Length: 473
Picture 1 (cartoon, helix red, strand yellow):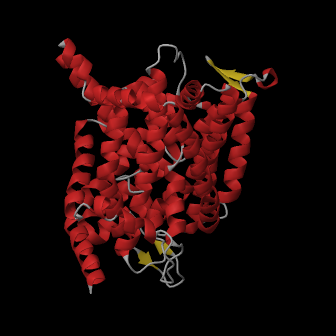
Picture 2: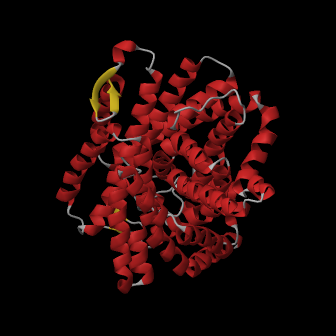
Picture 3: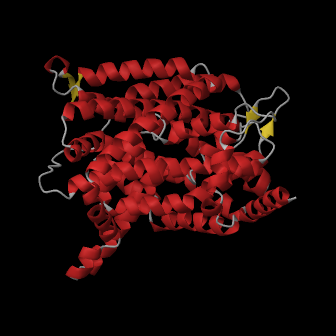
């Protein structure tokens, strides 16, 4: 019943108007920013490690790692799997489309966040779409700033920040330890049973998150800077091994993706109505999960970008846009191709597999190795990815609350305690419910942010022209 209600809300929030808004935003910004995601990616990569002594709280690399800590999470492992199950292989194609145009969106929103940020005398920084809207569009649009901030807090507490991440971690832990009878059912709620692995894993992750979250931004960025690059490399190497062993199956996987994306099979069968439904579902799930994964257009990454030590907004915008390339075009693609290859083989049984279980089973199947080994590797990668996402989203939602409350830090501390409580609750919800809630809150955040980006696209164009003209002098 509850799942059905959430699904209906999700379908409204992620209807055709929202999909068009997000894609249109990316297309407009690609044009206004002169296609720099295609022409300036090399420069963006070099700027990641540039040192800067300007005002701010974080280095460019730390800010990128903080942003990646919040984006490389369950969306890359669990989100891709649920998208393909619900929307078909074509969902991966729409993830790519959203990411290609979303790279320009990510550049623009992060650049504008630095341009319109507030830096106090004590060095404390506040910035993000809420200030971009207020300062860039004017006071009469301040209601959009508040809407974005409210939805940002909701996303942190109810969606992408807490419950979906801890749920993904404990699902992976339960999967990895499923063969151990001593960690079997601890208790049952209704028809759902929970193992000791889930309970113990949930408690440990909640306590570890509490230790870092109560330490604030510097501790969060330090953990992210240490963990994210290492775990991303491990997961990418595992994924590339999967694809290398199955290189002859990759062309068919791409064919399945494109057929599903455009309803090719249904067209041949004359089922035009079903084709529209199939394509719409693929677009909806692909774009929604793409935003869940890379957060381009969501308005979250600009909050971390605003804290960067830099005097040049365009440079940090370029640095942050590499996050979308790393997250979706590399990590999500590796996961998606492995799953599509497995699903195309009649010997692969999906059954009741979902989320991390499906990804793990797909990796084990296409590698042809012991499933237990892959389960543990996936569990470790997912645990670290999701853990850093929890930390990153605490920071994002705190900043949204700081804007709403006009900087009342006592309320922010109380919020941290509530945030930790919601982490503790996450393991006991269903995967589908958790990801549906995350989709809803993500969509609600993206709408006011995308509106502001379209309105301020002229500012983006001027900043880009001015910056690259200065490099030629």
